Image (cartoon, rainbow, N blue to C red; front, side):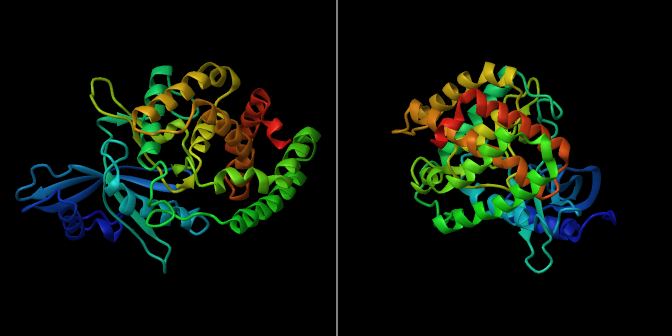
Length: 354
C-alpha cells in the first residue's frame, strides 16, 4: 500500500503510467511506493521514494525524487513552481544529456497552485560538494563552471528564445520591475537604518536612476541564453568518488532568458568571500570562455565576457533586497549583501554608472 503521507501523484497506477510515458517501464508495474527520506529546502519539499515492481522492470528506476512546494511558500512563490515544471517538461527534452536530472513527470495546477516533479534520483551517484555555506574545492568548482558553460552554450542565442522557449521582458516590463524594486529598496533602507551606509544608499539610488541605460545590454538580445537565476554551487550535483559521470544542475524555479554572466556573478560575487573569489574568479572566467568556444559559440570575446561579468555583478546588489522582500531568512540576504558589495568595490563596478 502507498504511504498515506504521499500525494496522489505517486499512487502505483499513476506512477506506472508516468514511467511508461517516459519510456523506462515496459510490461511491469509499480507495486509499492515508500518514503526513503524527506526534507524541506527554503522553497520546496523533497521526498526520496523507493519503488517496488511486479512483472518485468529491467531498467526502471528503483527510486525517484518527488519535488513539491514548501507549504510555507506555496502561494507566494507559485510562479517558481510553474516555471520549474515548465523547464523540466518543455525544455529538457531538447537538452544535451548529462546536464540536468531526467524528469519522468511534472504538472502545475493553475486552480490550486499545487505542482509536482518526478525526477531522476542521483543520490547514489552524485552529491553536492559540501553542505552550505562551505564552497566546493577548486577542482570541483572547475567542474561546476564547465557544466554551467555547456548548459548556457546549449541555448546561446537560440532561435527559439522568446518564442517557443521563454519570453523577453519589454522595456516597459523592465521599468515596472525597477519601480517595484525601488519600493522594496525604500522599505529595506528604512529597516536597516545606519546599517546601510550612505555610500551604499547612493549606489542603490544611482543604479535605480540609471536602470534604463543599464538594461540596454539585456534588450540588445545578443549573446544571451537561458539562465538559471540561482546558480550557487549548492545547486550542482557532482559525481561521487569513483563515479565516471558529469556534473548536474538542479532547481530551475528562477530560469529565464538573460545575459549568462548573471549566473556567474550570482555564483561568485554573491556567495564567495573576497579571498576565494579573488583566487578563482579569473581562472573560472577563462575556463567558462574556453568552454563556450569549445561548444561552438563564436563572436563573444573574452573582453566582452569581462564587461558582462562586471555589469552582472553590479546588478546583483539588487538580489539581497529581492530576497528580503519575499521573507528569505536574514542569514541568507544579509551575508549576500555584504559579499556582493565587496565584489562591486573590488571590480570597480561603480564606474559603470558613469
